Length: 461
Image 1 (tube, rainbow, N blue to C red):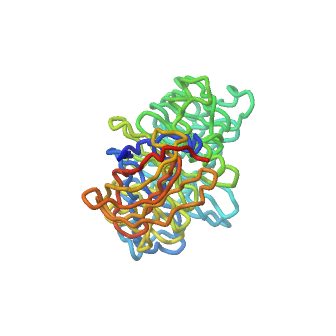
Image 2 (cartoon, helix red, strand yellow; image 1 turned 135 degrees about the vertical axis):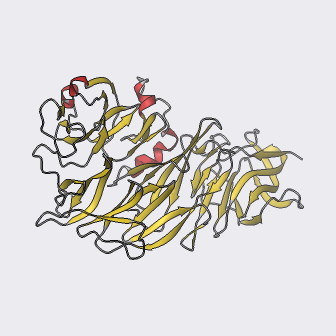
Image 3 (tube, rainbow, N blue to C red; image 1 turned 60 degrees about the vertical axis):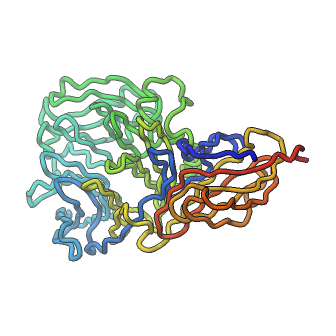
C-alpha cells in the first residue's frame, strides 16, 4: 500500500504560496509552537504567573545584575524582594506611566520614560536625587542607544550624542554633538529608530536606514552606507548574531540582506509571513522585538500575540511561528536567560517545565498545505494515519482547497502510534491537508505524520 511520511517541518510558518501548491515542509499554520533543531514541532513554554508588582510601578528591565521596575517612590516589591524597584524623580505636574526604553551606561540605568501627557523624559539613575537629565540639548525622545561610550538619541531630523562617559552632558564642544543624518536623505528626513549592526550605529527612517561608524572622538564619526528600506517603529528591531532584524512597512527584514541587495523583493527572513504581517500593519500597533538569548529566538510582540523566529545555521532551521497569550503584553525583559512578561501589575515568566499559561491550556495548531502525494489530479482513497509524537493530539483533514472550513471529525491520538494497529481514515480526495492540534496542559512534540492511501484509478470529477 502506498504511504508517505512528513517528518521535516523546517520551513515553519510560510504563506507565500497557495495552500494547494506549497511545499510539504512549509506550514500554513503554526500556532503556539516552534520548529526545533531536530525539525520537529514543539509546544512553546508555558507562562507561569509569579504574582503582582507594587501599585504605581511601571516598566520591566533586565540589567545591572537584577530585574528592575520603576516608580516615583521606589521601595521593594512586597511579593518580589529580589526585583528592584528604582525611584525616578517625577517632575512637578507630571505623571509617569510607561518605560519606553532603558540602557545600562557606566553601571547605571539610563531610561526614557513616557508621561501621562505623552511627553518623553530621559532619566539617569546614577544615585543623584535629581534623576532627570537637565541638559538643554538632551533630546528627551523615544529612541536611544548606547554606542562608543556615548548615549545617542533622536532629536527632530538629527541624532544627538552625549559626551563620552557622561550621560548627563549633551553640550560640551568637541565631545557632545549631533549626526546630520537628514542631509543624506532625499524624501523622509525624520529618523524613527536607532540600532546596532556589526558594531556600527544604524539610524532608521521610515523608508531607509543609514549605517554610521561612531567613535568616542566625534571627529571619527562617518557614514558607511545606506540601506533602501527602514521602519516606522522605534523598537521593532533586535540584534541576533552580527545582524539586525526589524519590522518594515513590508514585513520583517534584516540589514544584512538589504545592505547587499538592490532588489527589495529579495528573499529576506520575513518573506514567508509577509501576507500575515501586512494585515497587522493596517491597524495601530506598537511592536516590540526582543532577542531571547536563552533560546536563540527572536520575538516580536504585538499586544496579545507575537511572531517568533527560530534560527539555527548548523541545523539549517529558519522558521516562523505565532504565539498567542491570554493577556496584553505591556513590557518584556530578559534576565539570566529567562524571559519575563508584564501585563498590568501581573508578572509572568516563560517556564520550560510548564505547558499551560498559569493553568490555562495552550492551544497548539499545526497545519500542512494541501498535498497530492506526488500524484496531481488523481483521486485517492486515504485509508490510515500514523504519528510519531510525544503527548496527546488530535488529527483532522481538510480535503477541499476551495472550502478550507470543511474538516473531518478529529481523531484523538497519543504518543507513537506506529507499533499499533493502523488507525483508519475514510477520505477520498485528490489532495489532503493535515491539521494537528493539542489542547491540554501537558508537553507536546510532533516528529512525523504518515498517511496511507490507495490510488482509485480515476480522476476527480
